[in-house]
Image 1 (cartoon, rainbow, N blue to C red):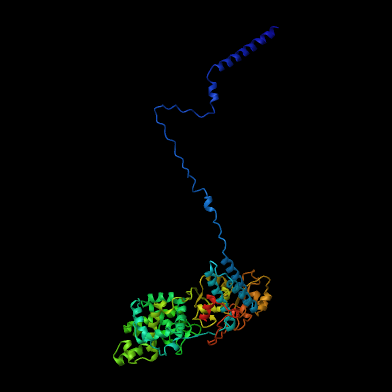
Image 2 (image 1 turned 120 degrees about the vertical axis):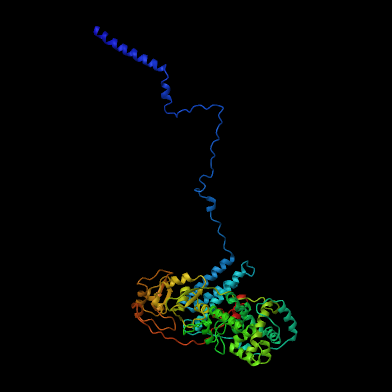
Length: 557
């Protein structure tokens, strides 16, 4: 028992000690540290007298640069196509189908599709809001059909070049009837007219105005004024650059009626009617394939320089104009023989031939009438649209029909843009004019044809279901040649395929032309000849239209 008692005594002491510790912990501040251990430290309390600082300003647009603008990203509502848009789309689809049929040699199908395109636009309501767009497109389609029909009738891919008769031959030899009652009117018009070229009334000028006011004469001057719209901007720019009067544009009207391929009975050529020697004098190159006298821009530049030189020589615009017609030597001789350096005096003394005597009065009459167009019923003419084109310098000889196929345009359209080109193959270095905005398409198509074959190969846009054998049969070639030209892989639908086949009128392509990369080929050339083209497209020959487009084509044909 003593042992047990001894054991309980230490235990009791330990329990008492533990109780004491617990009680002492409850009465001290130590537990406060444990309760606030995980809280942030307390800052000392500020005095009530200290000012309270303003809180920092929050920037509401802090992330405006990064935040997407939802409203601005929303697309605008797509406009609903108009009725005119639907009609134009349908007509263009039919025109494209007709073009494809024409290229495939299916003339009957082509004519049917062309007629459908015309009927769609001819059936448009007269009160359609976009009626003017319909009429412009109708005129374009009529013109395009005419060109395709002209290509088929005249053989557009051959070397035959058509020329126009210069109107001056039938005008300058005339005797103009004089109407004295017009003198007062003409004098009043001259006084009210601003002109860089001196204007003067005379019996000859009055007689010319009287003729151009007649039914026959008005047709002549009106046709020239319509065609003037095609070249007016270009001519006025060059005349200004060369420092000569703007009214000299009517020299081109008197000479050619603004026809780049006009030829006179004296073998003068072009819009400005240059003889060979005079053209060479002013840098107009003439080769078997090209004649710069028929290039509107180059010939205009040469004419402006020539007229400027003539004025510098004579010091009088009327004598300069007379010299442009008969040559400076002729005028010099007349002045030396009579002792008079005045055109009207020389005319009265019969120092000039009849053609030259009428030349200056005709030009002055055209100037006066055009500047007073309303008085002569010439103010509502439908001028041809300005000719716009892009230019590419050919690196190798190139067939013009290849360029036309690449652009899917009629050959005659490219010939009209390039009147100075006399052959179907344009020489290397030639500046080829193509419709405005079509250069990328041309360059893309040219990439399919090796440069040394651009004068003898064709190009074709692949259609669904076509094969090398089918293409060879259509273009009168050989399957192996067509496959080799396309690296034995037929391009996809809608892509261009190279066709080693000659255009109609050209000699066939031999097999060695595909295999051999080098070698020479003899080229045969034919002389240019005059060949008429149809005045009206067969595709619309059975229709009688009274629209502006049809009337315009009838006048210009």
